Length: 136
Image 1 (cartoon, one colour):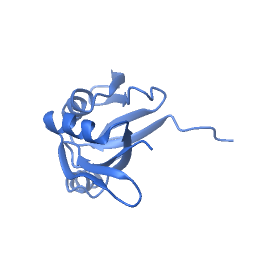
Image 2: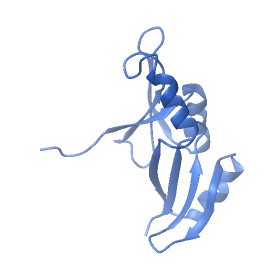
Image 3: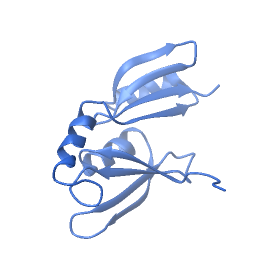
Image 4: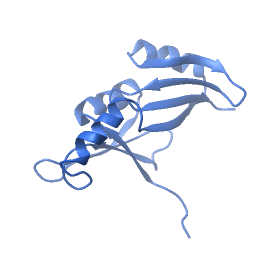
């Protein structure tokens, strides 16, 4: 029986830039950052209050996951904001929104009370978009 998930991937256009975005802007903690051969890097981060969930910031390069034809297609999908998505939560949406906005995070929707949640939408530096909601 499966008991939990411990890794998920977010495909990024540039791992150095993604490192800066997720660590310095979102405040995530680096879990693993190691070279895996001359052209590969295993980079995982986690929300500070959820250290057992590693988010792999996966480069879209030719190799293990992508071939010469699929890598540019995937980079195009990610950069257009048509591929990645996740839902994050915080304790105080308005305060978190102001803090992240001051750090340069681009929001596509300010905090809005919807019938399903109090949420804001933002994009990372690769084009992936995320919902940020307040805990109930």
